[in-house]
Image (tube, rainbow, N blue to C red; front, side, top):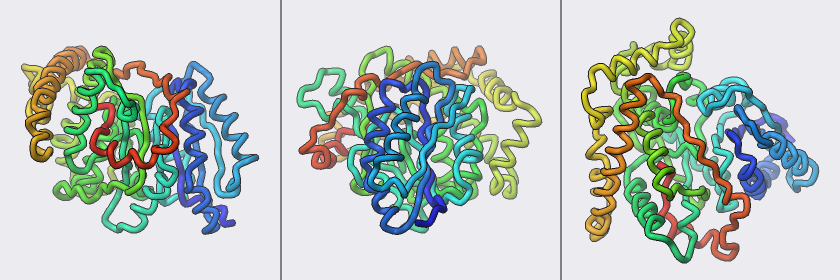
Length: 391
């Protein structure tokens, strides 16, 4: 067995005591470990428990210990928990990518601690999608809302799924819940401390333009076949509005960085972006806050936070085919109303300098969630039509 770890899997968890067990058990059911063992390869798994005030780290450590002893392919992985005092996905991401993951790793998986890996070949398929495609930088899977697997759905659940169809009609979708990225690219990305809640949007922008050196090329992000994960959807109005507010704050910051500030950098600094951003943060920890404050002084209305805030729902509508454009028109207008309300809340927060907003949305139902055993894989084709991310 080659002990060099060519793959590193980072699971970022914050107070996920109720969900982390189901997530990790689904992880150890992945065929990735048998595939690696057959090839004499090894990977590492690191659960980055950041700022947890519950037993997330202890639960994860117990599961790691059990599978390190009993898993049939235990020689193909190492697993450990890294407890980080500071709360925040941004800091946890930076630590995993730049410090915790093995330097020899060529591919990095980033996963949230409150999802369930659905199809057993998900991770292997995502890995192969990158290994076999020289132009791809990131591979993703198909995210499936838990409510998509219900036989009976409420009105709000149907609306939630319809909104997801529109979101998924866009190209080069990247959800921060689960993706695989080439390590050489990931290690040239440093997430600014005040990036807030839209790290996936920032990563998507950098990878699709190769650090803002060319036009957007969606082919840098590929969707792996036979790969999916399940997550607990937001269905209550409160959770939806809180999540949309978070998204509005994040998209505003990404717009300022990608479309304005970083775009003006010399080529050498773009190609060494992680070093550039670290140096800027070290010189002035408040540089991004100042950039946001300047933007807010110029922005008179909430719908001007970033381009296409109003039109994006209808642009996604155009991505649907046939009658779906008409049947989803009411959802587009409802989404517009939610977006404007969330934009107003985000506008007020940004005007006061409050950008560290991360609503406390847990996934307790995943603790006992079980996908239909006989149809877990077969539902994927249907779920693709009704899936989506939490945004």
